Amino acid sequence: MSTIARDEGFNDLKLEPWLVEQCTAMGITKPTPVQRHCIPQILQGKNCLAISQTGTGKTLAFALPMLHCLSMDLLSLFGLILTPTRELAIQIYEQIKIIGKPIDAEVCLIIGGKDQVHQGGQISQKPHIFVATPGRLADVMQSGYDSYFKRIKFLVLDEADSLLSGSFTDQLEVIVNTIPKKRQTLFFSATMTEMLENGAKNTKNPTFVWKAENQSTVSELKQQYVLVRSATVRSAHLIILINDYQAEHPDNSVIIFTKNCDCCQVVSQALKKLGFENVALNSHMKQRERATALTIFRSNRTKILVATDMASRGLDIPMVDLVINYSVPPDPNNYVHRVGRTARAGRGGLALTLMTPSEINRLMRIEEKIKLKLTEYEVPEKEVLKIALQVDVAFREAAVNLEYDEYEEKKKIYQRKRSILTGEDISPSAKKLKRKKNHKNSIKIKPEVALKDTESTETNQSDIEEEKKKGKC
Image 1: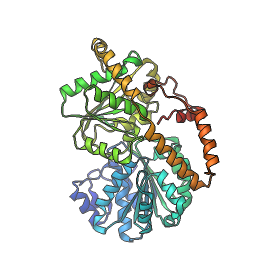
Image 2 (image 1 turned 120 degrees about the vertical axis):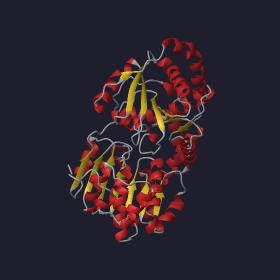
Image 3 (image 1 turned 60 degrees about the horizontal axis):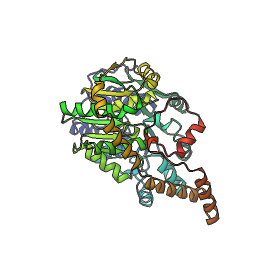
Image 4 (image 1 turned 60 degrees about the vertical axis):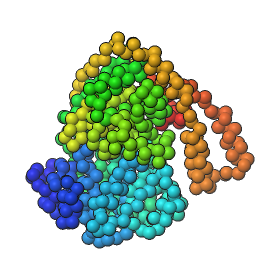
C-alpha cells in the first residue's frame, strides 16, 4: 500500500498544471484515495487494477493520467475506454470533453442506438480518445474500421467486473485482437471478481493493484430488508414503502431496481396507474427514450426511477436518497452496485430490499459480501392487506398491456445485420425456414411471467437459452 500523504492536492501527483486548473474550476481540489494511489502509478507506465466503492472518483483516476500523457504528445487514436452501458459511456464522454477542453482533446462516442455510418465518419477523422460499448465497437471494427485502432496506447475497462463477466466475451475478443498488444491496460471496478483478477494477471506489463479498505458499501448508507410473506403481496409492500416515504420526504428521489426489462416496464406502468409518477430505464427502450428518462429524473421533474441493473453502474445521480430492490438480486455484486446509487459523496442514504422467505439465502450471501447484518424494516401487515387487491389488479393490468412488438422488431434488425456481417445465408428461402423454426420455438408470454419469482439461484447454459427465448433481460 502506498505511503502517500493523505492531505495532498492534485499538484503533488505531478499532473500537468492545466489539469490541476481544470479540476479546481470543476470544484475538485483534493484527490480521493483511488486517485491519490493510482494516478502516480499510471503516470509511471504501469497497468492498474483499482477496486473502490461507487462514487469515489474512479473516472478521474483514469481520465487525468490519460489526458496528461496525451498532452505530452497529441497523437490521434490515443486511448480507448470501454463501459458496459450506453448511459455510462455518454457520462464519461461528456466528462472527458470538459476536462480535455484546454488541449482540444477530440473524443468520439461509439454506442448502440446511434447512426453507425455517422460514427464511422467520426472514426475516420482520427480522434484522440474513443469511449465505447463493446457491442457497437466490435461491429464497427468488423465493418472495416479496424485499422484505425492499431495505435491505441491506453485501454480502460470501466466497471471491469461487468465487462469480464462473460456477457461480452465475443465482442472483447474482437476488440483485443484489433488493438495493439503493447499498451497500458487499466481496470476499474467497485467489486472484485475472479474473472477480473485473472484478466489483470494476464497482462504482459506489471500491474499495480489497489483495493479500498472497505470495498463494498459506505458507512453512511443504512441498509435494511422488508420481509414479504409471499410473492403475491410483494407489490403491495412496494406501494406502502413509496407512499410512506414520499409522505415524510416529498422532495427526495427514489430508484426502484427490478430483475429484468419486463418487470421494469410492469412496475413502472402499475405505479402510474396507482398515481405515482415515474420514469423507466431499461434496454428494451430506444436510446432517445433512455436519455430522456435520465434527464427527467436527474432534473427532479419526477422523483421515482424504475430501472434494471443498467442504472446500477457508474451513473452519477448524486441526489438519490432511497434505493429499493423489488426482489433480492442473486448476485451480491449487483446489490453492491445498486445500493451505491445512494449515500454518495459523503451524504446519507437508505437501501431497502423486499425479500420473500425463498430469498433468504440470497440475502445471507449479500450480508457475507458486505460484512454487515441487515436489520428488518417493518411494514404493518394490516396496511398491506388493505390495498393488496387493488395493487394486484393494477400490476396484472400492466402486465397484460405489456407490448413486445417494438423490441422484437429491433431484435430482428440486429439479427439481420449480424447475418450480413458474418456472411450467413439471407436468401428468401433461408429466411422462410428461419421464420418457421422461430414460430415452432415461440413461447406465448403470460401476464404473470414478468413478475414471477425465481426460486433457484443456480443457472446452467440451458437455463440461459430458455431465458433468452422468453425475452428476459
